Image 1 (spheres, rainbow, N blue to C red):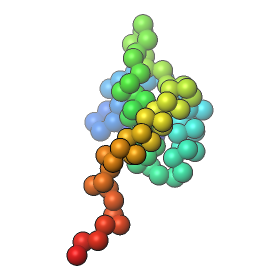
Image 2 (image 1 turned 135 degrees about the vertical axis):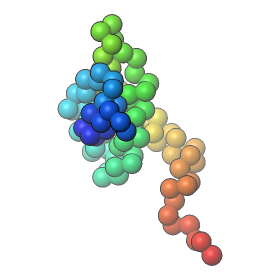
Image 3 (image 1 turned 180 degrees about the horizontal axis):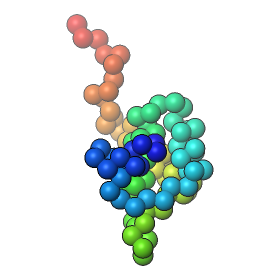
Image 4 (image 1 turned 120 degrees about the horizontal axis):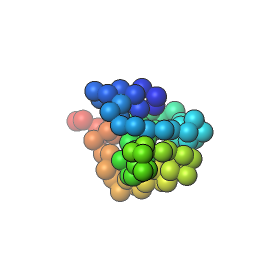
Length: 90
């Protein structure tokens, strides 16, 4: 996740983000090793958190918890069928 936060070409490196290490650990833990899920939750957290008066997006554990809930809601709504590799192709 640190790579996604710091990569200015493919990630959020152009934004000023202060991520609490506990929030990132929480996202990693609840994603059960699924990198796509943790990165999607991180993206939701960054894009839905307004910057503070100094222009810094602050990600804490509460923001992380809300973003993982939003990610789970998205998954239940069937927005990831194109990632399903268990579909029969014949």
